[in-house]
Image 1 (spheres, rainbow, N blue to C red):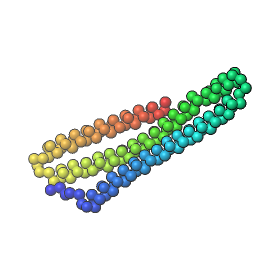
Image 2: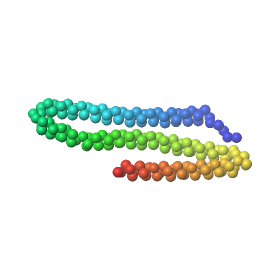
Image 3: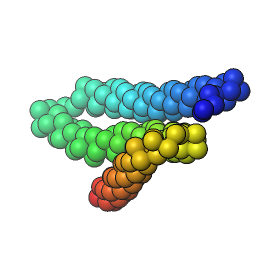
Image 4: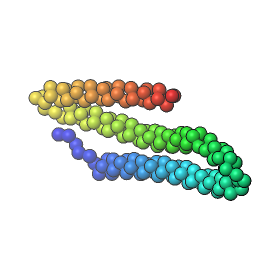
Length: 164
């Protein structure tokens, strides 16, 4: 008969899950902190530029000078918006990369645990259960191979997209 998890194994599994969740929460907070810093810096910059623009507008002597100032102030806006978008994208990609690492590590650990469980079940299975267990193991291996292939394709696609 198969042995159940010992209290130490159960505690270790719980600790590993808690560590994974804590790590994810920590990475989420790091990403949020970076996003907050980006937005705060953007707001400070916008406020300073608005004050400077208002001072220049008040100093304008006529309508043509005011229109020229407006054009001057609006010219850098698209480049600044693009820079903000790039920084935002970088923060999001870094956070996703960290989450992907944790998810992949958990997947590998769970896959290994499932393989060990099936191997253990095979050692204690009655003769009548050998064929169904072998079919289950074959299905599990095929599913794992399919998932691994899918993950490799997704990673390759992300790599290509990130180069654009």
